[in-house]
Length: 249
Image (cartoon, rainbow, N blue to C red; front, side, top):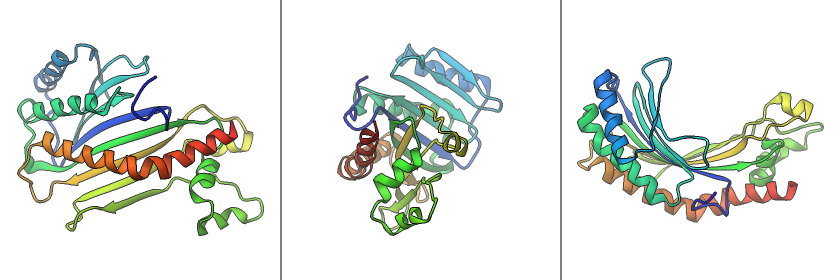
């Protein structure tokens, strides 16, 4: 598969999420017309799905290495692309979703809570994910002394860190590290082939009602996310995890 960060990770996710304080429309006509407009631009969005509640989705065939998806939940509108050939192709999908949202779904700036963009980096590893994180990201730190206790084993190393990037604290960046090893696997030594995920999320809270189009704000957030990914997250977080995985292969 080919994506912009193939030298760092196995899969790359490029997502957008628009969060509202109010329930989003879920009437049949509104939902279907919104998805129909997206399907005109992307005819391969052929799979419609409905969740147990008022949750709807439209997506491409997920059996391939790369695909797009859109999700409409009670208070959140999301879109994403797995393994895009370049970030710009994913941004164009998100841009269209945000341009249609005010007209097709009646979403108003008054009700908005936040706008997120997300870069997700998946690294495949069949073994104890938490040991990998402990070795790659905690070695040499004071927290690493926990593993010096007799018989200690890493079973839940999933740090989440959030920083503010503006004086009003409404622009924030978060790094989530998600491991998928459970205690049964550690006890038995029978591990699944799931991935370690590292998420970089840039969030803009809409508290001051900025006079800017959703799509323009989204592009600004993606620009910041790409910069933070290239300067910090990829070399200082993703690469060390990938190196430890490679050393264990």
